[in-house]
Structures are given as structure tokens and as C-alpha cells.
Length: 282
Length: 248
Image (cartoon, rainbow over all chains, first blue to last red; front, top):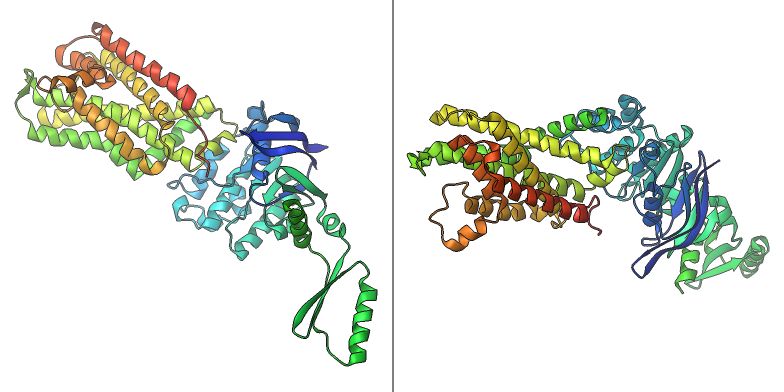
């Protein structure tokens, strides 16, 4: 079953084409990452799927609804974390959750949600006293209080320190284990690699690569060998690393010198991503 | 209906918990009334000054609460993304806005009752005799100001400037319309401006009912002008009201 199905989605702002015909499917229970630099069209895509924006062309189905025309029945089943939003500074964490819980037919238990997002200690603290990371967790709690089947996370960890990011990742993994479908946008490659079952790389309104993180990195089978010779960096890219390395080390042994700073390195998602986006920049 | 009651309860809690709204929106007209009655004694237009000022402050309260207070609330919620966030929930937008409007009406009603009680306590001003007429007049006036408040949110771009902009509108309006005393001795230009503002007609209604024993229906012109301002506000609001913060 597809939770989200997008075919040839197009959107322009004036003469600027933000989305130039993108297609993808997200299965139920899957964590799908939309990855791309700023301005690639990630937020436009997610906001069309959430029902905030209208599309100019293409077909979109989210949980069987067309988000452009869907009403309360659709919103009962989705949870949304916006890229930038704040909540009422004068309410407490628990009150904010209770207020949102009242909008849904069958909300989750508020205390459970607060525990899930790790805000137990801040239960009765006013929102204005929370740190940035805690506010983001509140956003997530409020998105989960309606017990949604599908959760949209638009750059959920932007601006987090490394510890807060790890904590957020654990939280997103625990959502996945609850069987929620998650659509996540990010411009952090490690985040996509850590969390997503599958991902699509978006650039200038076009999906330039799609697959599992392993498929994306496996698509390029070059290995990079680096070492220093006479004070200069030497980089060898090869599809035949065993042979190249053997040749290199044999030469060095014969000449009795050391391969300084030798490293052998498989391309990471980051390398693939940078080379993909660079190709398109040219 | 369940959603409406739920939202109304939280709107009331939000209003009274925020010091800014409780002081500047609710308390300010009451404080101003206490100050003005301490300064003005005697009579205005042949009526005890305290009664005339009481009527004036109720009118000012309508503009300050239903227009400026509502607009500041909605602009601040829009700019920090709360309105956008609410739209992702099953709460229908119409139910949400109705709850916000009814909540501000409740605040205004408490404000009016407090003004009457304070007038009674300080200056022995009488309770209103035609209560139903007064309620109708205030409901019409507050509704017209609320519609204008919704309309102006589309023209206020940021939260920072909003309360300054609104005070620049509300205070001169109250002055020109006669909230702080009679306008008969104002220069003709200023009176002409006052004559097109909605607050003047709300004050006509309040003064007619409270000071001169009239009924709501005795001032059809005032009713028509307030109604027209209200419809104008709604028409503009339908075109310009935004749920999302400005980009960037």
C-alpha cells in the first residue's frame, strides 16, 4: 500500500519553476527522506502534500486523499512539524498538548506523548522557558498527539547541537517502530543516511537520484586512494582498488619509502550527493 | 460545537494569561476612565461628566478591544506560525475564527460591566436602563470593529510594528469621535473626519441609550453606518486575510 503517491508534480511561483515534474511513492510504514540543498523544492513538495499549497500539475494522493481538497478527515490522520513555527509562549508543555489533543476525535494520551518526546521534566514549564531543542520536541509532540498515521517532518533538526540531533534521531526511529509513515526533508546527508529507508535527492525542482542509501552509494563503484608524495597530495580514483593498491604499495616497498597519510575510502552518501549536485551545477 | 467550546475555553485562558493583552487591551480603557473622571468634574453637554466619559470609554473600549486587540492577537499568531500550524489540524478554520471573535466579545463584555461598576463606585453613575438596547448597540459596534480588525491584519506586515500602527489608528479615532469629551468645539476639518469614522456612530448609539433614554432603533443612521463599516471590513478581510507568515 502506498501512503503517498506523487506523479509528475509541478509548481511555479510566477516564472520560477520550483518543481519541474517529480514523481515518487512512499509505502506505508516507510521513512522516506527528501534530500537537497536549500531552494531545491523540498518545502514546496512537503507543503503541497500537507495541503497548504495548490499544485500546478500532476497527481498527488496522500492516504487516499487529494490534499488540495481534503478536509478534517485527512487532517485527523496526519501530523505536521513545520520548518519554522512557534507555539503559545504562555502555555505550559502539558497545556499545549491538551489544547491540540482537543482537535482530534481519538487523540493519544497526552502524558504518553510528553514522555515519548522526552519532555517529562518540562511538563509544567511555560513554553517560553524551553530551549530551542525542547521547543522542537514540543512541535513533534503536538504533531503526534492526534495519533497520526503519517508524519511530515520539515527539517526537524536544523539548528540543533549534535547531542540534540542524536536525541531527535532516536525519537524518529521510535516513531518508525510504532508503524508510522514518515516523510522527512533535510539538507543533512548523515541524517538522511541514518533515518531514511529510501530517499530522493532533489535539485532545482527535479529528482536526480532515488533509492535506498546503500543503492545511492553503491551506484558509484569508484574507490578513492589518497597518500602524500614529496609533500603533495595524490588522489587515485579506481574501479579496481585491489590491483591499484597492490601496485602502489609494491612500488613504495621497492623504493623503500613510506606512503604517507595513506587512506582508502569508499564514497559516502555525501560524496555521491556532492558529485550529483555538482554535475547539475555545471 | 464541541470544538468551538474547546477552542473558546483555550482562547480565554490565553487572553488572561498574557500580561500584554490583559493590561493593554482589557485594563487600559478602565484605567483611562478612572483618570479622566478624576480630572473632569461637573457637566459635559448638560450631563454629569462621569456619565459622558463612561459612554466615551465604552466606545473606546470597543475599538481598543475588538479592533486593535483582535488584530494584534491574529498578526502575532500569524507571524510566529501558529495560524499555519492550526490549519494542519482537523479544527475547521471557521470554527477557530469564530471562537477567537467570541472570546474577544467576552472580554469586551467584562470590560463594559467593569466600567459601569467602577463608575458606580467612583461617581455613583447609574446602571443603564435599556439594557437590551445597549447590548444590541455594543454587539453591533464590536462586530463592526472586529470585522475591521480582521481586515487590517492583511496590511500589517510584521509583529514589531503592529501595536504602534494600531494605536496610531485607534487613539486619534477615539479623540476625533468624542470618546474623551465633546467634539463641538473642534475645528470643522477634524469634525468632518470624525463624521465618517465608525466610532462616532457607536458613541451616538451608546450616548442615546445611556444618557438620553433612547432605544437601539431610534438611531437608524448610526446603525446603518456601523453596519456598512462592518460589511466593508468583512469584504476586505475575505480578500486580504492570510494564515501564513510572510516568506523569508
